[in-house]
Image 1 (cartoon, rainbow, N blue to C red):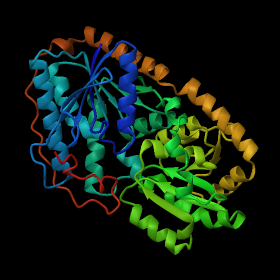
Image 2 (cartoon, rainbow, N blue to C red):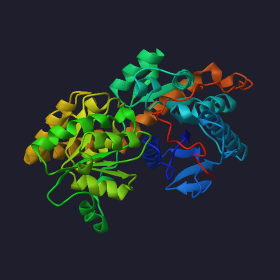
Image 3 (tube, one colour):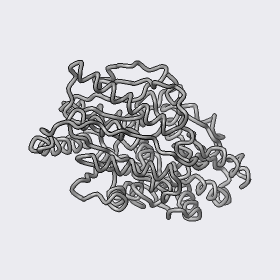
Image 4 (cartoon, one colour):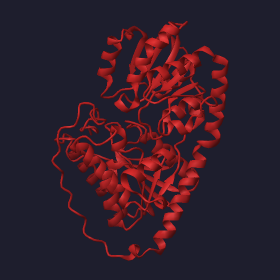
Amino acid sequence: MKILMLSWEFPPRVVGGIAPHVHDLSLSLQEQGQEVSVLTIGTPESAEEQDWEGINVYRVKPSNPHPPDFISWVLQFNLNLVEKAIQLTQDGVEFDLIHAHDWLVAYAGKLLKHALKKPLVATIHATEWGRNNGLHNDLQRYISDVEWWLAYEAWRVICCSRYMFAELQNIFQLPKDKLRIIPNGVYPEIFRSVPKKYAALRDQYAAPDEKIIFYVGRLVIEKGLDLLLEAAPRILAADQKVKFVIAGKGPYAEHLHAKARQLGIYDKCYFTGFIDDQTRNALFRAASVAVFPSLYEPFGIVALEAMAAGTPVVVTDTGGLGEVVQHGKNGLKAMANDPTSLADNIIWMLSYPEQARAMSEQASRDVETEYNWEKIAGETIRVYREVEQEYQRSPWRWAPTGRPERFEQPKLAEAPVYSRYTSVEVEATSV
């Protein structure tokens, strides 16, 4: 099949977990005989058209590099995506199916579905309601409406966990037969090889006798880093030879720095900012434990990466994390939103290194058997085939193409200070 992937991020543009997911899924689909084209947003250094390991990648530039606000930017790049896709079809490029990833490409997904008369599959990686524990302002309500609209327009909706399956049913009233659960995955070998020049990086982050407690990911409210900092004094009371290495960037960074100072643990924390993949892998190898204290986590791909790297993991028992980690077998689960429980589980992992090693070895085996991309791509292809068979029998296939709806930008109140999208630059493409 010829698949058109729509994603607002794709390497080298990496903002969160969607970029590596779309990249790895596209590679695996291509390896199993599918022809994949990715349509995404460009960056100053990236080519507009590129053969990326067998994937056809097309990147668009914004018409206005300085839009007035975030939603204007979203609407603009969606129109750019549509224009590029139509141009490709006029040049003879064919697509059998459109696969849209999250609400940011919903407009393009719907317009192309009706313009090209091709079925739409959507992967919803998270919901605005879940990220914010409800909808509290106009921007959040608007995003949630667009998510519902994408789910409504899609022939099938893919989610990554039983937790997300239930959430999509509850929030958007989706019927069970429209939903499919396909977990995220990793290529384990990527996280197990560390070049020699990175092997000595440990000394840059902690003293030789300090144990590293490592977090990597976006610095946003839902990742629960407040809990980790609140757990730190209890951990340090049990073991002073500990360093908290917190890697990543996001709108919550300034708050976390201030909180670490307030708690008197700032000298025990290392906020690295953004790190590259090899540095991340080296820190996984150097860490005594990787911690993911999320308040909301549809799946938890970074925890899976830590497990693939062979690092003992402690997570909170929430969302998809609670499904991936089996307490006492391949990691430890703390009670959600409970810094004392989080601290006690981290202390246990640091205190019993042999048991921690046994759990990390089991976790590594679980990743290879349950979360490998060959298996995940195969499950995705089965969904594509289901949709294609239904599409061939559907009268919609032969219905006349209607005129696209006119989309008007809503008037929105100012986003909250810690909006997930605060740090997304709207000249975010700067091309």
